[in-house]
Length: 416
Image (cartoon, rainbow, N blue to C red; front, top):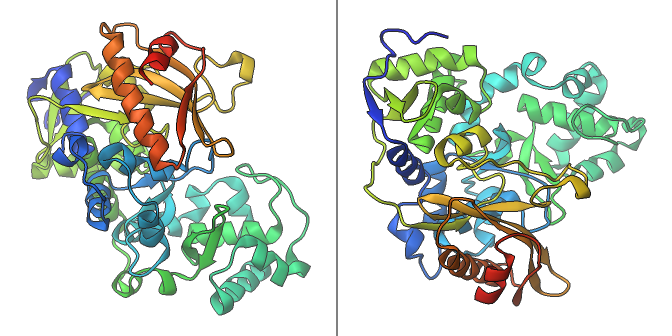
């Protein structure tokens, strides 16, 4: 698509400057990153959420839940009860909805997604949409949650056993009962929401009036175009500098949905069109983006961290080709099952396949690889070893064990 005259880039950024802007936007240029507090507080969590806008959720627990990692990556070891309190107790600072996949978002952002809830027929996948056809089951499930929530899907199924029906696939998850499908339909519509998760990672469904802050629950629905503009605004702040596909992907917006919002933000001066060295499409710089001269970061990043969950962006910024290989057969994996990029300074310099062996009390490094253009491998190994020891302590693991696989494994084992 040709760039309009109004959107024509007005100045250029070097690739190194774009990297620093991106890292600063995600909190990696803060003093609290390299000099973390002794006990990160709810205020640290709130500042991080305000900065990055969402936490992607994923059920894989080979290391720790995906939403646990971003705060650790930014301010170091923290008490996981902070997240449990933020998402499961009043006053809630985080609620769950479909943002960038399943995500924790601030209650104010949950309200900005009501247009998606209202468009379940267009926005939801087929299995969820079809669940809405059985009005009697939908109404019975909603009434049960209203009367007795918060309830897990299993608890609702037990209460409505006569409605559970035959379990079947729905295009997203397999072996769902009719009651579970109804719950997910109601969740997508916003007629029920999540009051938090159990230790087994099950949603606890409840009605929004008992979960959301009263002012948010009672607030009128924003106009869809205003809400989408605000979502793009959040994405732009979280990126610092980004292309249009990156801005819209943060909240899984379509190009027609995001295009007018981006144009409005350019017209208002909140976004400034720029050229980034080596990028083949125009980008947008947020007006308030920090432009540090240097970034001294050190962090292991979850595969679902907002810095890297757009894989082509990671490749464009760092030349770091990153693919999650959970669903790849073991003998076909290149780097491993649950691989975390390692950020050092301003670059992604290595990657490690990690597993928390809770029974043995060991953080297992099943493979370790350094990027081809890294010159000082010994320093990378030493810094990575320190970060792994910090992670092990945070996870309650007493040791770090490094296997033989990967071209960084030997140096890392010596450093650990």
